[in-house]
Image (tube, rainbow, N blue to C red):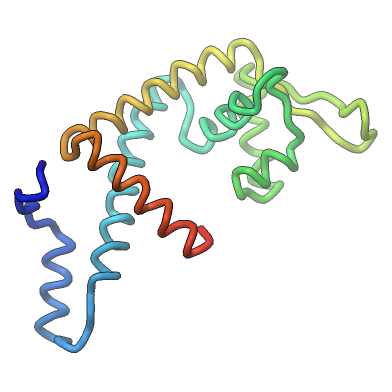
Length: 170
């Protein structure tokens, strides 16, 4: 899509048009921007769920495995480090770790430097699975981007969203 081509109307346009009728004094651009971000996140999230389901994991479990994989060798973090990175409570993290450990995708062991601590390590099977799952998830995201934006537009959008996230502390 080029900048000269008008974008098709979407449900957010209908919502902001309704507000314009009943409250013409409102500037609804923020509603349009964040409404689209929310709807896009929900739609892509559902597609990502399907992509990850093929591997027997949900998005939250992918996040744990992906965080361990991104940490580099030896693919080990403490539950606290995982919780902080994923913005999860320790209770929420425990449930995910239990499920992933039962599936043989990671293991927990005592922290050799802290008698009260644990270390969570990605198993070989977990590394293979997350490598396949991340490729599948990226294919879903790439397909969505390429259906509407060229490379330059995608880069511009990424930069604008980064700027917005930085400014809002997200």
